[in-house]
Length: 516
Image: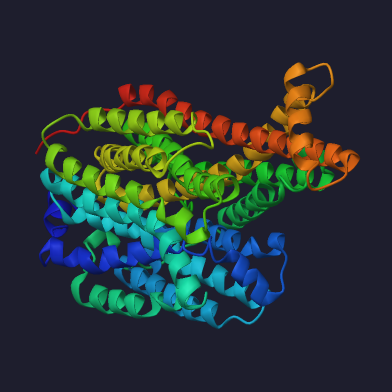
């Protein structure tokens, strides 16, 4: 089949803007479920009489299952046909959402979340491929702005919506709300979507059994290390060392099998394209910063500022407004100026917002949180959509499903690493700063001595002088703990901000999008 024939047959049979309605609906509920359960996790743990560590598997099992399916999307699309597999994925996700809401114990919940991850894993890469293929190049910027809005806004809205539902209804409803939307998306996809020739069902498709096994072992062990490493003191625990070793061996075997096996699970030849390779690295970094910031900022507001779960989630709304503003700008400017410039501006805004967050203290107002959040949201919108266009612009349409599958696998890993890394950074940096500052709490420090006597004098009105002295020491040590924790947050914000600046030079390796 010639390239001209493929292009001609790839044209959508219905208006693309109508066709993508169910696609975006499926994307939104899938991405939303990545964060909507975060604020409800303590409630679920209480319902199941589970510990905090045990309840974390409710989140990680979802990521593991989705990560396993994502690289196999191209294979399953060939076996079932891409449209059929997309509908199967939506229905599996919807049914699993119902099972999550019905769960009565932690074991069944984890099983349901794994099933939900298996269903959701195919939604994002196929949706991205459909969105790219449905529009001509001159309209892809606008189309990917719509796609990016769902990908960016959903995880931001998730904690807010999850907190409101949990407080006003009960936690099972954060899963039950997926059911009507999932059913509507599946029915509309059946009516509106179509398969181009290269996405239709193919005969005699063989699965890369070894590759799939290596992939499963790699992701399961990696997620276990990321999830449990900090609590186990990382590589000071022998079982973490063994688990990480197994993960790295499985990773090497997986990529070796994909290079040497003709019937490989994924086609790594797309990495020969400079746009794809550089764009994928940048997207992984953005994804890691996005999910790390979604984890660290509410935690800062709750633990240091005394915000409730709902209010800490609501502080993310300015970021959503910034993202929506950026989407409008991106849709307007993407076909007029170099997309690499938009990405550079977006990364600079994210990095700048991270540095602003890295200058916070405990004497701040809501505006000190809202303004940098708005600009971080703008940065996310200005960078994510153009970089998605740039990374696949030089690929053929028949490479899209495989390429987007690989990208979303790596972005999924980036999200897990970012979330795990920021948790470790908070713990370790707090310990470092506590160690550095505790030496100042001694009788030879006149500032400490004056503060101690002043506090003890105030407390002596309510307790014996000797007791007041101990209470004053405890109070000042508590202030030290709070100060060291604050510095840990500051260091973490700064590191993620600097990381965004460090990947900007990669844009020089990418080719400019050719205007049609």
